[in-house]
Image (cartoon, rainbow, N blue to C red):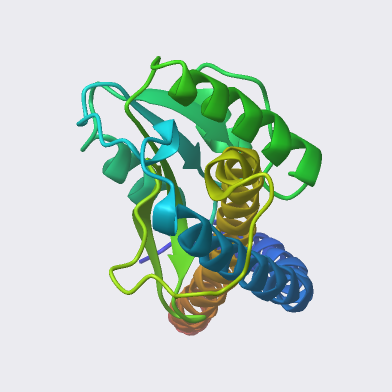
Length: 264
């Protein structure tokens, strides 16, 4: 028969875990609205920057940022979470990294910085200055021929229930097939303006991916904590049932012993 003391301690332990998961769920839920708003703002900016780039690259042949040099030297900005307990969020990112064994990694997010060497950059507090600094370094190295391809490994937000780790290739810039036509005149010229616009486009894309990844992280954490809370409550119910049965069995045994003793 199970020990009632052990069952009681086990119930208290699971209840403590339930309080923790519920608190983390509330914190994640409080961040989702703001994270979603910032994600949508960054998406609009990145889409607008992409359209401007598409217009500028229409007749800018020979620009180094448009040259396809193959995939020999790849640099990846890997965006993971600042914390754990978010389901498979971080695991999916690190699993995707393994598909690029020779890539140079630039980590963002504490979990990514713990795994890969680099400066500590938190995804939640990632700023426009950080994005501009990384973009300037990447664009300078790409123009100098020090790397052939630059991409961002982030988590795309599909919905509250689904987030997908994927790579968004940024350099070399690949214009859409249907480049929009325009009668605008550019001074000093499309090629010069394109070289100046590329760092802004790269920085905007980095910022958009970081914010989308953070929104995915808090959404994944909320769902994971909600699932953990449901499992904890089910476990408490099961343990409580076992405890009641064990306690009833002990009472029955004590009554039996008293009755047997009185008849002697």
